[in-house]
Image (tube, rainbow, N blue to C red; front, side, top):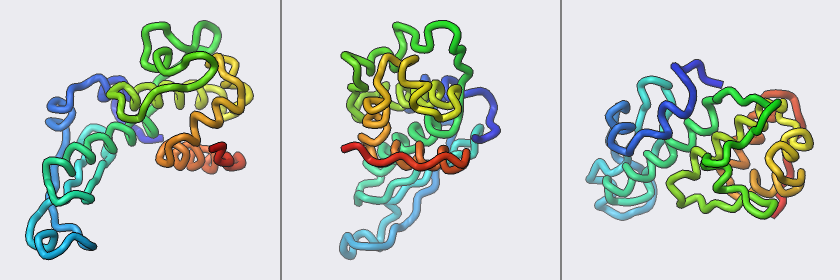
Length: 180
């Protein structure tokens, strides 16, 4: 986990403009396919979040504007994966008005990655699992999920699945299998 000031809530609740204001923005030329124009314009974007030293980068598009939006989304997810907020397991682990409560419905995690509240929901999910030492069998009942439903939620998006397995590996736990 990163040693940053505060937890993820201080950053994921910010508007895009406010979060961008906290970043150093690097524009550069990306290599790879895209034709002659790609090698002549600085369309790739890397955001370095000054308070946390986390980064988000995108270079898929020839449009700098599109790449900045993608890099910002990736930065939000990186903040969700790395920074933790305290969770008290003796009470209700999921507040009813939270993004995670919105995502948890009918015994499964049901929120589109395109939803603006998705990074916050993932951060809260990681907070609860972290508080349980990344033991899914212990975290699942606190979330109102079965262990397999929690595993499916983590494996639904490749980037979330990789982040979960990186954390489990760091704790010397076996990696999760993809339940797709």
